[in-house]
Length: 172
Image 1 (cartoon, one colour):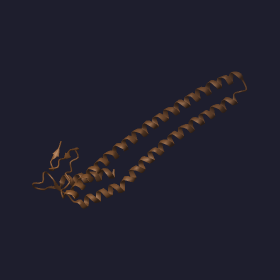
Image 2: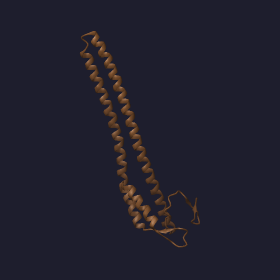
Image 3: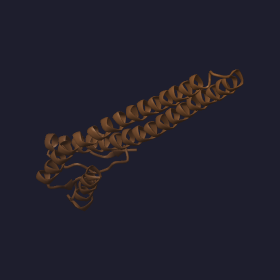
Image 4: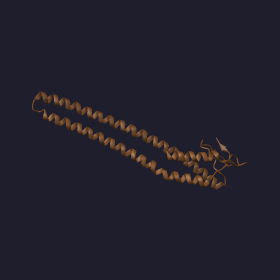
């Protein structure tokens, strides 16, 4: 995944940056390269969103196909039943089979729908989780970049959620 590679590259830049002496652990980073990477992330983000939309569309198609198959099975069962109306015993047998077929088709359609919903939910959750992680990383990088720009300091590169005190030390 392109976004993960870009985030890894950001992390590598921060990890390999040279520490400034007497700065409380601050590092010097290549701001131009960080800005380039952030732009690449922005460029690639819509692709991830399009993938999510495609997954939702696939879910709708799966459900529509299951309904169509169920309707086809029901129509076939009804046609068979009409053809057997000539004799009462055959008609009774056909009605029983038609009802069983309809029930089976409805059950299969419900199972297909449930499976499709579970699959789509898991894919959407995974996409949501990945996008959340990417967004959190971007926000952290942006915050560090702003701190660097506003204070003349450089980003810490820490991603463990620690906060900075006014004196520049980490708050755990």
